Structures are given as C-alpha cells and as structure tokens.
Length: 143
Picture 1 (cartoon, rainbow, N blue to C red):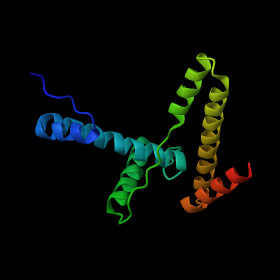
Picture 2: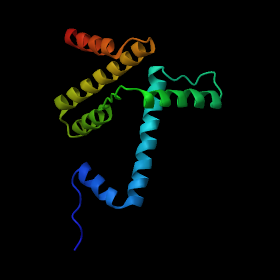
Picture 3: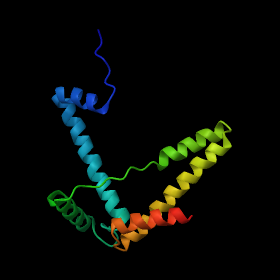
Picture 4: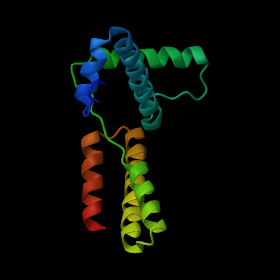
C-alpha cells in the first residue's frame, strides 16, 4: 500500500524531516533561495550596489549585509509578490473571452507594478518602509 500523499506544507516538511538526507537537501536549497532573495532585494532597493565594484568588493559588501541581518534583533519582513499570478489569470480570462474580468486583473497587475516601482525609488532615497507604505496607500485612495 502506497503512503498517503502529503497535502500541506507542514506535512511535506514532516515527511522530509523523517528522511534526513532528503531534508538536508531541502534545507540547503531553501537557504540558498532565501539568501538569493535577500541579495536581489538589496540590489533592487539600493542597499547593495554592484556598479563600479570588483566581484570581490561586491562579495564582501554582500557578506557584510548578510552578517548584519543575521546579527539584527529585528525580524525579516517579507512581501509576497502576486504580480505573476495576476498576469497569468488576466491572460487566461482574456483567452476565455471574459474581457471585463481580464481587465480587472490587468489593472490590478499594473497597480502592483507601479507600486513596486514607486517603492523602489523611495527606498533608494532612504525613505522608511513605513513612509513608503503610507504614501502608496494614500495615493491609491486618491486614484
């Protein structure tokens, strides 16, 4: 009899942890992906800037950022990016000729794209995340 397929993330992690070799691979892949996400975010918001630096200089700057994050008492704040899903759904609805619904998804995707661009510009100008969030919320209400 085949074992029951895990339905939730927790069930998958529990199953992985029972197989230590598989869990270690999963853990290493997750670590790598999280570090890459932090580095990418640092480049986007201007915390890390590879321009005009050698690979070694940028590597040292990146390691310093990662060490500072690891030493920090604050928790990491994550933002989920739904833009890809919004665009896929808009395209799917368009193919199904559900134009009004597709337009709603395209408009929401555009709003998310603009908000991301605005947030990036303001973060590069060293404005606080709280200020950026309040600005985006205020301008959405007026739009």
